[in-house]
Length: 143
Image (cartoon, rainbow, N blue to C red; front, side):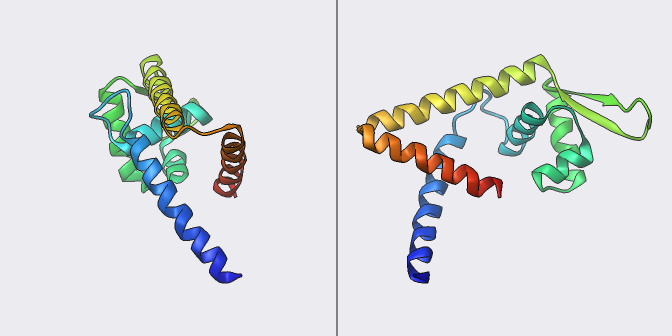
């Protein structure tokens, strides 16, 4: 039984890695890093964050997140907003342009994935299996 789990884990890791790599190459702004896109995505999904909270969420150091946010701010994709109660604390928020970059990247990635599904000519059963697998993968990622 353990060998089955191990083999499944290995196959799944390899497939997810290759798929994620292909999708990561699709983006609305080519010169933007994966870390920058991840920070924009986190801000879109969860709203305004402090730098430290965003760093924690993305599992990077505060100095790394500061550098990431500096680059995004220079591009006009995020703004820094001083905390109303503590001037030492700064919040980061998406700009409309940042929202557009995230939305366009998601649209392009969804389109690419849809094309990939179409290219392998899946039938209704295969699509149902993919939907179930997506739900399971999400559950695993959220645990």
